[in-house]
Length: 158
Image (tube, rainbow, N blue to C red; front, side, top):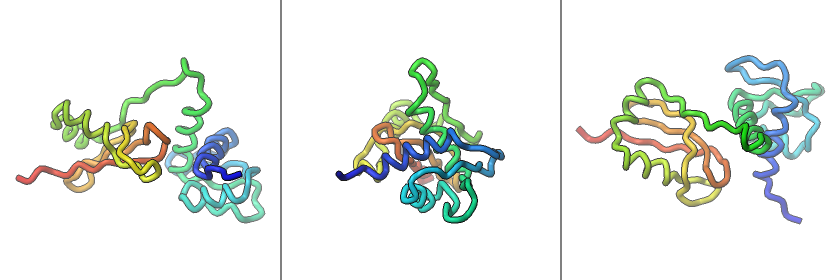
């Protein structure tokens, strides 16, 4: 039987959230590594875990890995009434730039973001916005498959 390895990776990462310990803000966490080795290696290749090969009984989670694990755990396992939709986190400069975009354009922007997994334009579940140079970068997840997606809004020519 063929398995969707990306889904297996997502669920494994979500379950790793259950067994995290030694959390340090901005530094990730540690997690028990009692999961399939191939899956742990793929999560390492994706940048969510440190190299799982070794004698330690736990594996290091990167900050990105910990935050993604928490997000996936809440998406897959929280009761519907407990799910809260977080407001996007914007830097002050990014919020100012985003608010300059007309409302109709904002809706179009978040409804058509390219997802590399789905290979189509998909709605964006907006998580954060920040300025990189003069460009506004919006990050979040694909509403269809849950993959990380981003949208860059370049400055208008002046």
